[in-house]
Image 1: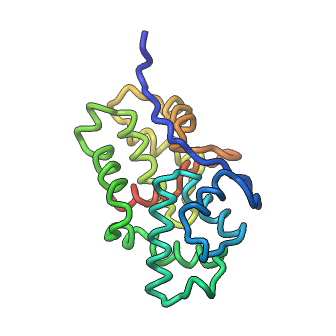
Image 2: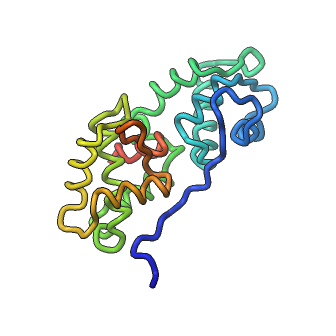
Length: 200
């Protein structure tokens, strides 16, 4: 017997807040120029946004470097930190900016497929998860989280007419890193993915 739901598990790089030498910090060092220094608050902020997803992390860093160039910041004069990354988020990771960004086209297209009517029939689990991410992002664009009560409402609407229970959807989505639950609050497993889903 094969399982009815195939979980798509993202390979995420590990990181602990404040760690100067985590697997994720090593990824950042490999992607950024040696001249472009950063501190642990920067690593923490990027990890908070991408959860260590390598493809999205690289895309964010490329976007960030172009943003720094556009703002005439010299790499020799800067040490990247969490406050700068927050400014970058406010300018470059809004729904409007992401909708027009050249850096996240692959994930925009992927999520567009997941959210399409065809996916509702061919891959209803992904359709439901993508819809939950989209609604969390649209309804709570700043906090990017919702109560369990709100999650159940969103999941019920997404799964209407489908044989997918909201509890099983949540369990599987947590295991596959699409969602996470902390103290009764449902959050995207990867914030940036939810932001991109919110552009549809």
